[in-house]
Image 1: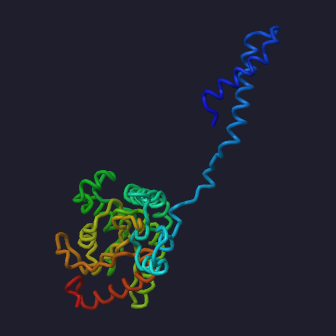
Image 2 (image 1 turned 180 degrees about the vertical axis):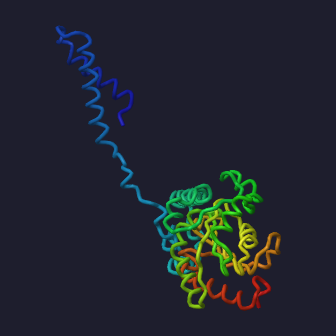
Image 3 (image 1 turned 30 degrees about the vertical axis):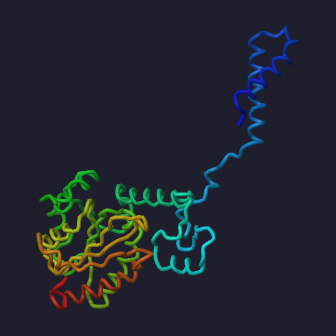
Length: 305
């Protein structure tokens, strides 16, 4: 860019060239000076700097950290890369003096931002409608209340309980989808895991009819649904608290005849469901087999031998 001294010099040179044009009005002279100075300043600046376009900026979240080694002159590069393939942890990131390198710092901030977005954003209403889910919500009025009052995320109003009962009836197996602490997890996994669960249950002659979607959902909300519907098994698929590795992790909480205030030990949990962990399709098949086992043994959690 042109500094202040260079700009003053340009204007002085132009003024000297304009001295002979006394017949012009002062305003015209001033306009010419400003126009010529601006043109020259722009030309000079264009030769000394490059304007970056958003289209040219790489998306740092697309970089596979398992293949990226930022350590300068590693003693065993191959061994380092093999170790990185076995964990999503931030190893082999190197340093610049006593600090992280720029790439590491920016990636950390990007992953942290994705985690925050997953917590505070909502599952798209069009996504819920497209998949034919029955939408209900707990007693939380908004995300702030959901974060600060977990007890509200476990309860439904009497009116909402009636809607759940009317929509679901008394199914043998009730599948519930909750947004939980990650809306991104729901949108990333549900369309793969749900068909796998349904297909697996159909192989055991078990049909799943109405699927509930619960907004502002906490895990114990499934206990209320179990009491309202009197289902034999309730399976809750819920977005889990996002971390810096992924914001799309989902868990399945499954219980046989769940009741409010029951011990947590009565729940069976399958966690880490996402593309980089247990894949949705694989988890769906496993969940279907677990539900069949619960129905046969009439138990879940630690009681399921």
